[in-house]
Length: 182
Image 1 (cartoon, rainbow, N blue to C red):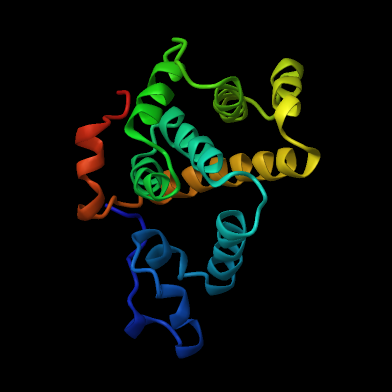
Image 2 (spheres, rainbow, N blue to C red):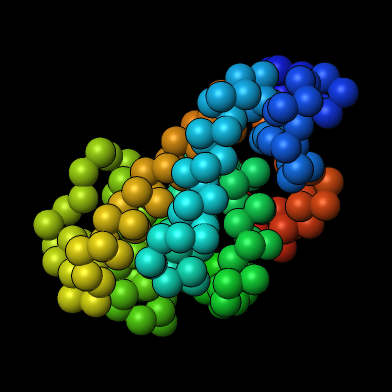
């Protein structure tokens, strides 16, 4: 159960109701601080619609953050989004395998993206080898976009966890298909 009440349109000032356009528990909690919710949403939307990183790679990185941090809300929501951007079930199984230290059949860039996400979940820096592997395929703009994406979602999972945001029922089935580690 969330640590703050989920607000509805009736609970907020008219000028902030647009923040509840997406009927998600995360936004229903964040709206307690409308300016924060607006800024939070703006960076999230920039990452999704305006960064130059390949959308599938972006979603793979976000899924890796969600899986590595055992964040059910993040993981389930981005499983659905990831499918929309080309992430296949085999990719999700590869994320799980790579997290366990196994080698998957993913291409080297995909594996480097996942490794970068795991490293940045665990520590505030990226290993030189991982950066060099990323730089073989990504230009500086895409590397910055990747790092900002991973950093943002490392923050998102902490907000979700600290506020104990509940996974909406329509996303629960993903946890049956792809359970998080215990």
